[in-house]
Image (cartoon, rainbow, N blue to C red; front, side, top):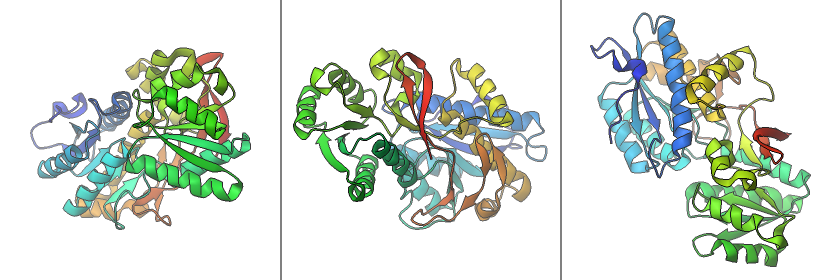
Length: 370
């Protein structure tokens, strides 16, 4: 399960470095492309911290562990990182995995700054040890529901798989849309072939299909089936969880993958810091950086600021969350207690509903902002 430390800290093995743990999905069934973008952001920020003198002269070292989208593996990695003496742990993309990591961090007394996961209930009870940069699912998905209503899409079908994350999303959509004249019907992709799912969409008179499923399976076969069904020429396919964000989506689906709105956590225009970091990330990745790469950079920027001002004591780091005031790539980052959210939360990162332009799939169109 061990992944070697990233090059940003590998050369500092004499005990003088300040160690940060990093949880990242780097192998399947984890979303590997998201993990690659997250790690690129984390690693770039660590290099920049070290180029600027580190933490009071001590280099920052990133100790990376691959979660492979496995909650048990993430919990075990948190145990291992705690034993290695990390000051804090950063990262993770998958909500169900981050929840397992957050529970372990709380139990062990290890500060955990979650980069990307959005599940509202990241921990069962309120905790002082965990903070989060990504917006809570209830916030982002309500903005997505507002987009659906504004687009005149009120008869919503959701293609689902068993998961706490997908079930939470379905419930949020149903609760928010019902008072506004919307309906939500669930279609179980474990029980329906893509063709049978198309029949169900016709039977229900659905005007939108939301993909609350994994990528590439079963999302890709479903998109192909719906796009190829003339009866469904007018239906909107949506993916609030962001599957079309990454280049792999277009590589697999081509034109069929365009025009599928998803949530993206970026401002309409990046400021000077975001532009600079975005340029560096593009060079590292060899492609346009996703919002996940910016989340990685922002995570380390926050932790480096905390380490400089409060030292490496874990309790002092956790106590500092409410005093954080850091300029991130997507705006000023501060943490607060938000009703219904059990961790310290940045409320909120900018949120957009975007899609890939059917005329130019490498270009994103902003359809709605919240």
